[in-house]
Length: 250
Image (cartoon, rainbow, N blue to C red; front, side):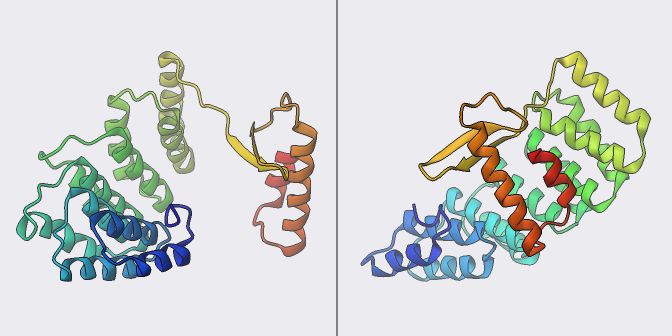
């Protein structure tokens, strides 16, 4: 519970006071450190678990590979992926391949990510191709990005966010004809982008609201909080695009 909420110091204290550590407690701690980008700490815990005689399973290997991905530990991630079959007797599942694609994509190793997706040992999910499209957009690699986009479009995914990723990539590259095709496909499939959902704490719990929606009975209080946040960001100069924020809260 503490590790999932980011309270790693509390989680570590609880972990340290436990008389016996099992697979579940190690998995929880490794996942927590991994999500916070503290991959080195997560891997030390994994080594500690191995030294205690506990053998890894498929679930904990997902957390280990994810920790490597979020910390940019490419070499370590590759080593653990190989050890699954060579040392641990585990057969990589779709979740493990997903972690490896994410690992390469985050590190900018787009060719390796594409190579992993084209392996015949598993069937890529739309989310995997979307991760590669997003990475290609960030890195400005339209060549691999277009190949990934075609794979994703062929799946006819119902996730509007995937189409938005592709559209953004084409727009950034100035590929207007391809962008028009994506938008037409969204209309033909009836795919619409859901409005952004956010949460505001008004002092008595969190209240959900949709971006630009003023039908919420607490809308005045919500937008008052947003105005205050906007002013605070101006004062500390922590927002790189104040005009965007101001346009949002108006």
